[in-house]
Amino acid sequence: MENQVTNNANALRLFFTDEVFVVKDESMQKRSVGNPEPVFAAGNVAVAVENKTVLDTEIARIPEIKSTTEPKVYPQAPEIPRIAEEPVPEKVFKFLGGNKKSVLILVNDQQHDVSTEQGRELLRKIVKAIDLGTPDFAVLNYANYKGTDYIELHRFFKPHIMLSFGVEIAELKLNLSWQDEIIIHDSTKIIFAPNLHHLDSDIIAKKKLWGHLQKIK
Image (cartoon, rainbow, N blue to C red; front, side, top):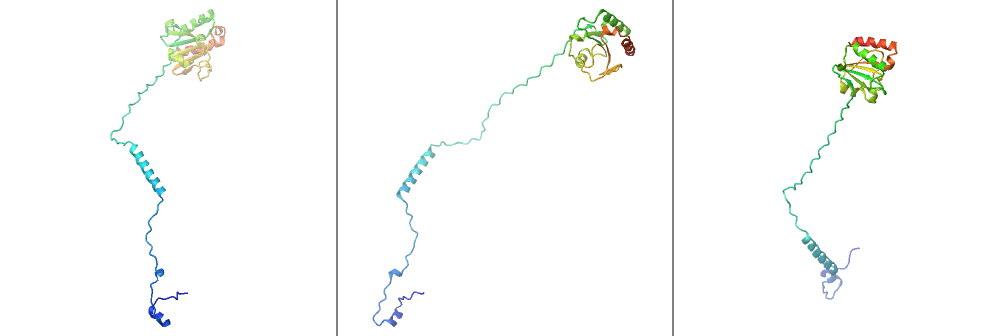
């Protein structure tokens, strides 16, 4: 509903015959609203000032960091020299003969330097059959070097011919098989036969050996 109160003078004369005085109603004016001034508590202002003072003091204590364009050079650690592996010393063998013709004769006798008297006599006949003298071959008693393989023997003696009496293929660590035929391995001709002492009394084995020796003369 609209407000029926009026302060218009002409309108009021229609209702009232007496003198009408229009009085300005101060209560009808709207109070102008301005920007209110902020009100701060005194305690908060004091704390803010105190904190600012402490902060300024701490900043003043921080030393100034000066930038530099020159990088700092650190000394390099000395290079540690590598330890060279020591070469494995070559095995040395004590043998009979001169090995001038690179003929290696292996025997296997734990009680004698070469073999029994019968075995030594048989060996003299064998080397004579292939026209060899003592300076031409090397006789090695394998019983004194158990565990030595073919590679070690070949490295030391470099044989063109190897006669093995009583030393088996497995002992020399050769991946070969003996089938009563001359074996050619690494350009070395190899013949296997029984121990000299036993071979002297084995007629069949001696005949096979003589046949092989004729092929390598």
